[in-house]
Amino acid sequence: MTLVPGMYGNIKLIAGTACPDLAAEISAYLTDRCQYPVPLLDCEIVKFANDNTFVSLGESVRGQDVYIIQTTSRPVNDNLMELFITLDAVRRDSAGRTTAVMPYMAYSRTDKKDYPRTPITARLVADMIQIAGANRWMTIDLHAGQIQGFFTIPGDILMAQHLQLEYVKKHVSLENLVVTTADLGFAKGGRDWARALNVPLAFIEKKRLGTEVQARSLVGSVEGSNVLLVDDEVDTGGSIMKAISLLDEKGAKDITVLFTHPVFSEPALERLENLQDRVCEIIFTNTIPIDPDQRLSKMTVLSVAPLLGEVIYRAHYGLSVGEMFNE
Image 1 (cartoon, one colour):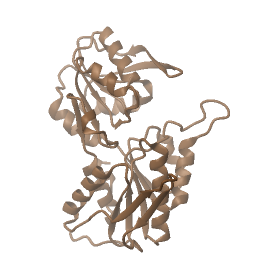
Image 2 (cartoon, helix red, strand yellow; image 1 turned 120 degrees about the horizontal axis):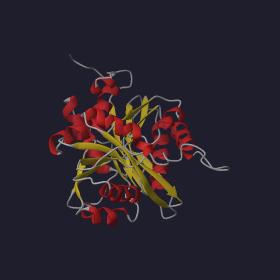
Image 3 (tube, one colour; image 1 turned 30 degrees about the horizontal axis):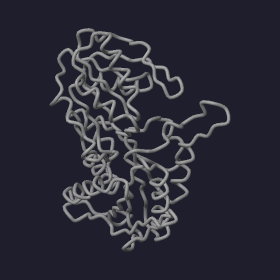
């Protein structure tokens, strides 16, 4: 079947400064998938001496299908502001449709009012993305599902599990394996993993006291079993560290750690390095880039470029995204 561009013209990719390598991988995937060049648009992004960000498109995107690839990791506010300004530049150049591609969406933990007189910052970010000019949005492993309702524009909320699962089945022994979540907040994700691998499930209940995390109890059994410890992100590494300590107490054998977003605030890398003697492997994705010199020997980084590239391809040509996942 020959596919032709739809009402939004050709695919135009713009790389933000937060994840240029991932954007280049997506460009290469789409060039191969579409069987015609899909390069990254020439785009000048400059930060002036006064910290103001300036964006200038190197070519017209009038009437085109534009995808701005910008993860919103550290420095969070700079990367978000760059995304907003780029969206505005594209809107003012009369793009046919604009999609904000955020492999990692910042502020997704601030999805509700936990205390009086506090903001719901995830809602504010959603509003600003739409006001800046996005017609659609795309992200991976959104921390809180209700954030979907903060947007009035359509979006694709993808799961990294679809690419992680293939790796786990090839490289992690499923014999005597128990999937365990680092906390109850990722219970649904844990159930999805246990179902996909057809293995038992256990949960760790934790309590946060200020910035301190306490792993309080284990729901389920891991005694004498190997463990796949799963979560959506690792920030300071406190939850993972306390979870592994509790798993040791409960008699777990080999432990593999798997998550999507390597936020890695201090002292996460130090904590993960200290855990290397205890864990078999630390598996995560490149939704947030990390420096090669920060990679530890037991780290495995899986690229989300094929996942995002395929969804961009299907969105452009009006094909079902759910079919990718048998949905």
